Length: 383
Image (cartoon, rainbow, N blue to C red; front, side, top):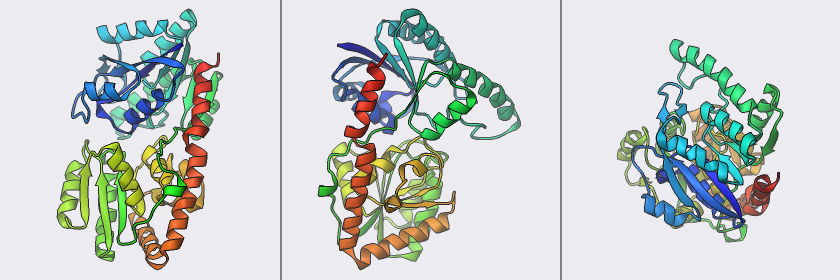
């Protein structure tokens, strides 16, 4: 059996989309004895260590690191961080999602000395940014230096996996000469097109994601829902997610019409599937993504979606049947398209059900386990 180490740059106990994906990933790798080395973070955790360990077919160990406030880059020069780096040399393959310059340079050097296969996964949508998320004189200056160091570190890595093809194109333009794997995330959808259903009594617009303002666009979601509350009295809204700086925005939004807007917080996997199947439309308001797991997952359950035409959604929603891509960040047009979907649902429910079935087939063909997992397994096993 092959030994696989996953060096994960977030805390598994957060159990957001990334953590959920890593668990589903390792649970589908029977060829490997896997250990997840998870960054030990702080804040509000959705899961305990025992719960996460019980879900993952892998051992989980935690390490600490210092974090640079402005650049959000991690420095692993702690006892547990250096101990973790030293342990991974004994594995056959190391898959790293920790996009830290120092970590990448050390891992590249160790892989050459000890012969393990080191693959850097670019899951973080900020990794290849050309400018800081919040511009300013100091941030711009620091980011200019950081960007050059980051590029040098990436060029030294022997294997890189990108989940967004535009990242791969950018790496090649930078002069990357290593092995590049263009493999999207897969979606774990437990009901295919034949089980897609339609709620004939009510039209529900669903949001699923972490409640982040800058990343997930919770402020934009609030504006869109407020416009729809005034425009149509029959659309219901359900918000699934917790954590981050958008919670107060969501609380204030629910107070405007608690009968039509329901905030469910964090829900179980079973309840999430039921929400996907029962909803009529997915509202995806992210300002940027590497992929957008909940967007692809919702489509796997047949949900048409409205999203901004930004990196991530524009790759997932390649087929026009899947929904509408809106110019960033036009909330008026976003709301108008939601009203159009309500009209379609209201006028012809059979056609709406056929649309949902078609969407599920399209997305499962592109991002289903049978399509993506063989590529991931080959990536890990190939020399």
